[in-house]
Image 1 (cartoon, helix red, strand yellow):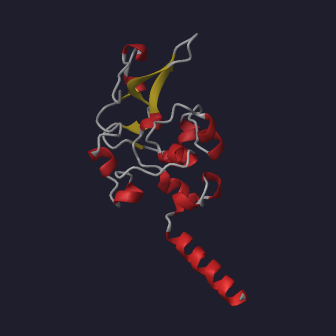
Image 2: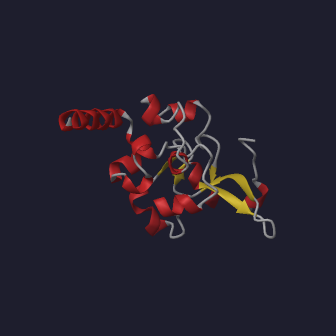
Image 3: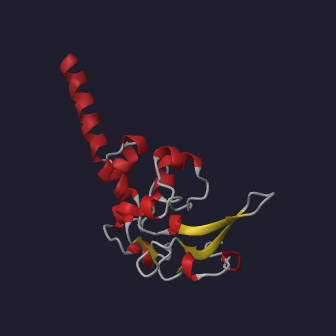
Length: 160
């Protein structure tokens, strides 16, 4: 009887391992490599948002952090970003849980909310370009903030 129970548990454990890590683990359980791979490369977290006083409402702009490459939607110096841009917000499980400005499509946000990744996410599609092909990324849409005089004049509504 004990052997059957053990085999049943072993089969269940083997089945669970077939699930991708983002379905099996919480954000805080992920390895550094898993965490980094959860980023879809859209660059939208590096796009500037404006928060209106009084209402707290957020507005999307077409400006981005000076380190975001508008042609690739990737950080030009990811390793040193906090040194170069001190107010860069480094995503952690705790930050993801609190930040409501992350895109609805963000892999970190989706896993935190126990939702699945979209078909175009590189972990699902196997191709880092599908996020751009699906029109989800900042690639080709943004201009670095240091090239703009007044970002309040740059409000956009890409995903309405």
